[in-house]
View 1 (cartoon, rainbow, N blue to C red):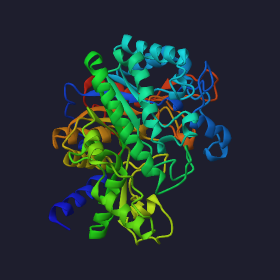
View 2: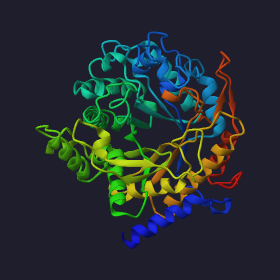
View 3: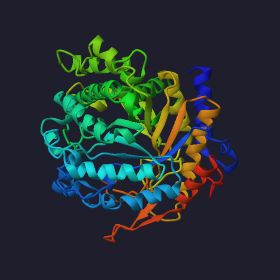
Length: 496
């Protein structure tokens, strides 16, 4: 292990073991830095079958397989945000956020998934929401696809079918034409090819080692097509920006052994770089380690060619550089160690990856077992992105903490301060080009397979009350204070 790597590893262990209030970075955020909060359509809107809305894959899944959701719940009503535009925007204004990230329900806008019928109520709903945001000085940041694909399109194979590239372009055009004059930030995808394609989670294709790679391949082509659509037909008049959001954990080698260092590199390239490299890297295409590993296992599994679809040189050039910003969801850190090669019996994304993932039991935890509080990992990831992708403008599109929904949410307050302090370190000390931060989430909401057992919201929702009343938590008041002062102003409530 080199001296540099050893120093980085020791620093990581030191800075994640115990953090005190005096360690917080109290420098100011840059003058043009933006603060926001986030949600997604299926998780908060409700009104799942009202006013002509079509069925999404998550509507279908939660109704057909309630036993697969931790508390057997669904988002038929969720936060009922469909009926609470003015109330929700008033809460956003009270927070003082610069922008609100939300997603469009594709099946609300296009009930069949196709443009043969555009639902007037879908146009009305999102126009009203966007108009209310703009009237209150809040910039809309709109995600086109946040996991809730129309069921009709999934029946065609979803994101494993190349035909969806054309269909997604049609959907995006409807959104740009109807809402783009007031939307300064567009996100094509909240990436999700690592779930639901090799597992039973929606869309539940469950063909690991094949479906994930088809999904990524189609998604990247769809993203690029929509980027060029916006660039050529809408940018000049609408003057917005467009990018993609990638889920990014930090993957740290568990030990200083060469094999574990290589395993951590594989983890970053497979789990972060596999979607990011084609768009944000100067060479485009897939990371070399990803190509090599899948080709190696494919050959030994007697496939005639690699299971990883190949881009042509023209496609590589077409896709790379299709961004104005890099969207990043960041929550936690994992430790990575190498493992022995698995038998060459069947395709598997996990076997291609060939790692063991753990977490340090000493790391502060949350109500979600997977979410440990490791702010240094966020700083490390931001630096890795800077070093590998030319320091693009980064919008942290999600960052948040799970608890049980209590109003005095000390754990969430500490989490935000620690991670925002790490972001400040990355901006001021490391010169990483982070331009915005988004807290997940605006409201307690439906958290996919965890249902309502995990609460990430700045605002408490009483899901037992049909009216779904909202109550700001202590973290909402703290976040408002940070936004107002543009710096961290509150000490940690307890030492971590």
